[in-house]
Amino acid sequence: MSLLNRFFKTKPKPQALTSDLRNEIRRTFNESAADEKHFPSTIDPRIYHVKLIAEHLGDLSNKRVLDAGCGKGRFARVYKDNNPLAQVHAMDLAEAMLHYATADLNRCAGSLTALPYRSDSFDGAYATESLEHAVEIEKAVAELCRVVKPGGRIAIIDKNVEHWGKLDTPVWERWFNREEMESMLGKHCRQVRSMPVSYWEDVEPDGMFLAWLAER
Ligand SMILES: C[S@@+](CC[C@H](N)C(=O)[O-])C[C@H]1O[C@@H](n2cnc3c(N)ncnc32)[C@H](O)[C@@H]1O
Image (cartoon, rainbow, N blue to C red; front, side, top):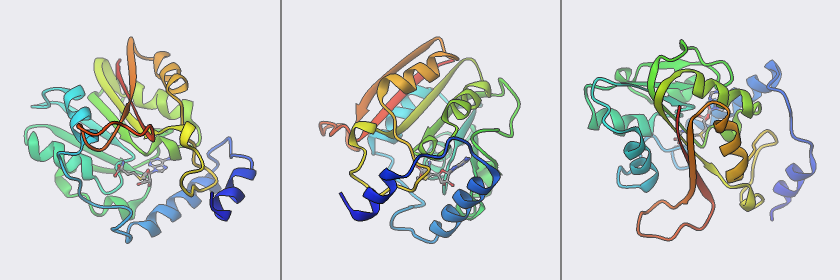
């Protein structure tokens, strides 16, 4: 474990997304947008994370789908390319990240904890490695569920808390275990399941990434 990580682990986690903390997170990701190596603007559509979410969302023709905490919109790009008739919405806190998403992705700046959308207005929504930065996780999960219609699909991919310490993480970041995210989703969804996922379908998951698939 690096010194940096040891330092972060000893600090108490922020419990509230205050405006100061939100500004700090936004600034950090705005600065990171130039780092294409660690924050790529494209993703190989064969990667299992992309395929799993697509399979769970189902046919997106003429459907409205939300990428919550989209970053540069790399997942949204694949889904729009594969489903030109879908309305894919890409929402993120950091405007510099959104700048990389093209206009056909219905870009919008906002916070996971107060989504700028009407209730029951999406057929599906997903969040990949963004809820781990939301700080007020229960609120963000409730928001994700609020904007999806009853019967609509929700997918989350994030890191597994059992692997905490393997990467350097900012003070606000949290990882989850299967049960805690299942329980948060279960408050709003009629079906929830979860599984470890790897980048490639034919490679045994190492447990770092978890996927939660829900039906509102
Ligand atoms: C690790 S990146 C993942 C981006 C994208 N989902 C992907 O997989 O490429 C995390 C993203 O979450 C966004 N984020 C962090 N806190 C947020 C918040 N409260 N509301 C919306 N987006 C947030 C960041 O700006 C950043 O773009």
